[in-house]
Image (cartoon, rainbow, N blue to C red):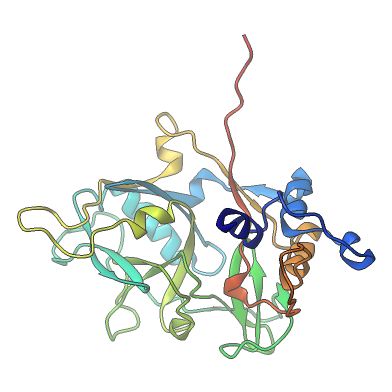
Length: 296
């Protein structure tokens, strides 16, 4: 029973049959994902993915060049320099963030920058179109999705920012808004929307959130606290890691249909349909692309 409940809530394809004319004409979230055409997915460039290797495995993170290009480019440079080798995830707050980098603040950089101008939002002269969610938000005039990231906007759609949903990749700072550059964090547990536009968000975890949740909560004497083996640009390690990921295009017909399916669940288990979903409760379908094997 518990397994059946879990698969239903995640929108799995294996669902109980529905009854009645209205529900039989609608597709479940799982069905929409399964039947989406290849053209409704995009393959994430290896140039836009950093691989963070932690004690229990690797997390793969997509960088958000559109909304925070300076931070994305600096992270690529830090990865190329091997800046994070031998550093650690030195701060863990349950249900909040895991923060990593150089706790001593003494490790030098080569060509990267230790401090960057804040990129709290992207300002455009004309409205920037997003796949918009209708309904109240509380933190922003508009919310929705852009290029596979959960975002928010002002009313005129001329300021756009990535929001603090679980699994975002962002840059820590001190009171100076332009002081962040190397100390990253990943949000875990609840969404932290009150941080929106107070800090630069420039990516999201594609795969490997479990490794952040498995980090140690307290240090053990004589042992490095949550050591980082490396942070690498996936494009630079293709010979040893051929991982590929695809993300459903958030401006595709399939994703728009998926929003409606999440707002009004058709599976037989559900008895209430709120006709609403908030931006952080709308998962963006992400899949690991398995390598093609040639038959002998």
